[in-house]
Image: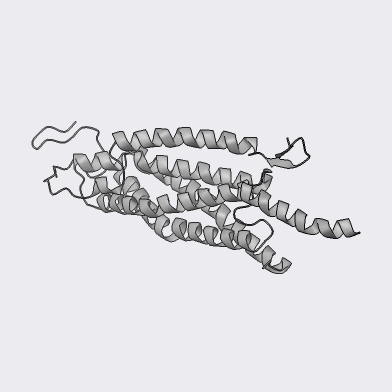
Length: 181
Length: 78
């Protein structure tokens, strides 16, 4: 069942807000990651890892899940559908993939934060904290979300086979009426 | 470019859009690279879990800054 115009605008506003907010949060996370990996000041490194841990759990994960939910509602309750257009399908894949990796990565971030908050660090701890893992993961996430944003605006043409079959079915059911006219 | 190619009898034939094909190739290449990385390296949150082996707890950092070389007990500080 198709949403009313008012509901669609509300849901679209929510989806854009949380999705672009997610991209912005990833940009902030990337800056923290750079600070954590490159700084030689212990307090800065500690603060950056603790911030990243909190940010992931209370900002990134909620935003990603709400973006996925609002996206699903918009796809299923509007003419676009979830599997009819390649740009919608691509965004769905990006969102699901990024959300899964993010949920798994929160464990890693929690581990990093646990090391960072210790009063002293061993050589092994230092090697872990100076790993570029956080930079790589947040950089990749930012790139994926940027691609999703571009797809949202440009909406490149292209029906999936399923969408094309649906379109053909619609055309075939409307043609008998036209033939009679 | 149209996504639909008309056959000789006038019926439209479905074609996958070019941007989808190109994206698919890029994703495939990246997936292969990622698979190689995951198979040859130690990846995943499990690598950080304690293995039960005693680790070196000698502090490598002083109170304010990080040094790149490990600190030995009794060694003179720069």
